[in-house]
Image (cartoon, rainbow, N blue to C red; front, side, top):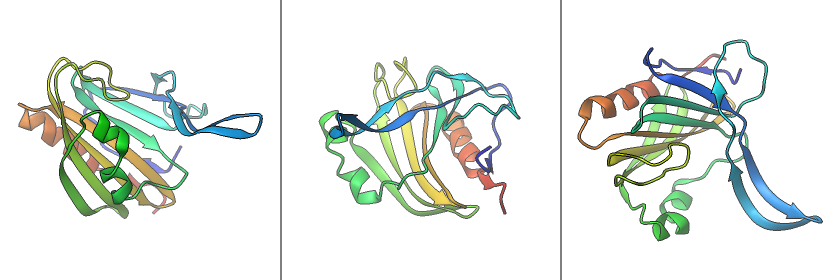
Length: 173
């Protein structure tokens, strides 16, 4: 529906939903510039014409990907690195990957660690400590915000997340 594809491990659960991501206004006055109201997830079915802008892939309670299709402007690296909420919540950036290019999608990524018991958006409470890699990619008329998580002690699952994102391609040429 959105003009992109990626290869996903066959045994992983795949769901989609329609998030609301925008300002909160009352009587025409903006009270909050940006708030995300998460979607109610439903199983993905090719050809389903119900709108969706978030795809969730789960390989287990501490392994998976969230892909947000963002038609609005994308965050830039400075905004992500200087995010006051991230700093307040102790979500320290461990590593930044710049100048990423995957099949014509370009952007950057940041790597963070989340302790067991954390609740990253879209994943619920994590039973294990994880590595989180977040990508901000644009290309082919799309903006994608992707978050992948995998247990800190599983190089295999971390590599699976990277390979899944690395398989991203445009269906529009």
